[in-house]
Length: 179
Length: 179
DNA sequence: AGTTTACTTCAAAATGAATTGAACTTTGCG
DNA sequence: CGCAAAGTTCAATTCATTTTGAAGTAAACT
Image 1 (cartoon, rainbow over the protein chains, first blue to last red):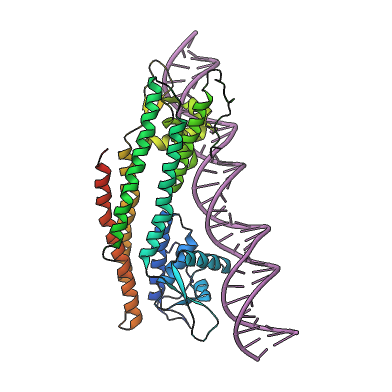
Image 2 (image 1 turned 45 degrees about the horizontal axis):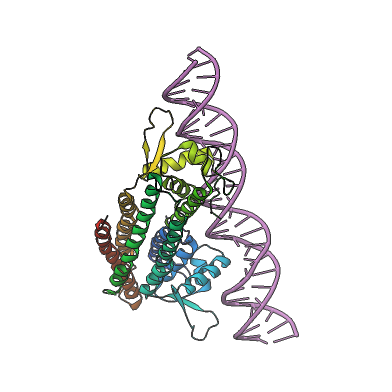
């Protein structure tokens, strides 16, 4: 069972104006895939589900399409799409001769991944470094053993921070390979 | 202000049986550092705070010490310590001639990081790969363009999965360098 | 202008995760 | 044995985040 309900259909039938059962199954599996992945990154389910359903469609989907294929409210569709647009995960394609906007996945995933890398990891590492600098200044003074222990610990954290920062460029390079 | 309350003290004073103000400040900064980092990894605040307070102490701390330095309940201390022991973040040192157990940070952080890497990333990537295999089987059949588009998309996801898996050994190697 | 369609906003409700605290277990001591 | 200290457990509560839905805005059609 998909972890986000997708609208019910009758197995083996092509629904009036609708999709075949195997298509629905495929959509469900895709939604699940993204919902799972998103959990790891702390992205809300509904957002991941929307991306999944858009990704699972060979043709751009309208706002209404998304709302009906997933069982989520209009409000959630609206907010989810906003987030996805902001991070460049989906893009709007102008609907030829129609008032409704259509959405399709932005397949340049490299950009998304890179943005995530920069915004979350790089940023966190950087401000971690700053914080550690401050921590070092706060170190209780003293020539006794206790003070030395604490200095060593702060030093260790700084080493880790440095190591992690050094890893980032490696990851970036990796991403560029074989797009 | 530290993001987790630490027990109040009077600035500039050494408290009866207590710690100097600068020590308290250092503790607060350390707690904050770990609470921040933990947020990124989805670890509960109280757990991170406990680790922080233990890490900020040059000497092993007792259960009671932890409870009084942070303002959290006995229940949380107990559960937090359990988690930290399970992942090998703190270890119990036998208190010479006393009934209370004492805790100190396990400074072999490499192990912790590695465990995290294996349990969360490696595992997720692996099961992602499996899921993608299933997804590929669910692909709606057809010789038309739509089917081709979907096949290409699943393929793209598989490429990403492969790429990410390939990155893991690189990261592992990196961790081993310069302990 | 008035109506419909398409979407957005945001306060309130639902969900889910972390925290508490009271009851319980265990171990040491007189 | 009985009491006290140290810790654990878990149901109930609190807190944060996500989701809903009803009211509102904007553009297109008639």
